[in-house]
Image: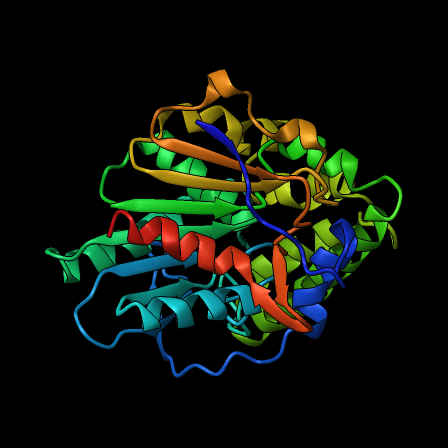
Length: 327
């Protein structure tokens, strides 16, 4: 089912760009007490989980976006709202994210679902009689929707995703246009810095073969590049794809949503500067389980409303309200 969103942007944050930049640049720190856990993956690598786990309420699994972490404002904001509802939550940091370096050459990408699946199954075994929900933003939303569709998992009472790059090739191309190139260059610069830090870390722990492989890949990277070039030269070969095109084709979540078996909210904005509006699915692609909510505003992981001059993080409240209907 497709519905028109009731979201109304803050009057002082018009347009997709202002909506997009507000949270990373101007949202204050979300005060929240959390407990960190290091989870060892099947290949011996490690990721960090950040818990808000008081009580015995439902557990909400949360996945961040590209170059983000569990410390991203939209993640901590949602964890705070979940706590106020009496729910527990766990924010998953993808490999190498959250100031927690991983110990293998491989990293995370838009179609990597095995780590999240392992993390969830580990948690599910600890709490077998608990209700679960899951939320993903941007890249994390693509990972979540792909995972839900490719496995047809029914273990969640409800899930939600926002600002999802449902067609990765179209999004990569869109990021080469106009002002979107500013976001592209910023994200790629952060990824390049992360790559250099990872090489240094791998050398420091004696994994010189992994470090040498990343050095080899990074030597082919020009000073300025597009996502197509980055994914062709690094992401694809590092994760077993023959090309960026193959990576995009296999990892894009739009082809998987028809198989989703649990109630799911998909929140998208047509003025998202990270993607063209054409990535939004047609009505006939949607399963009965999925509610596609489309806004003409909202930007990318924005959806900031207001009460006077006070920002209201509408996206998080909308997601919590949807999950509450099923939890």
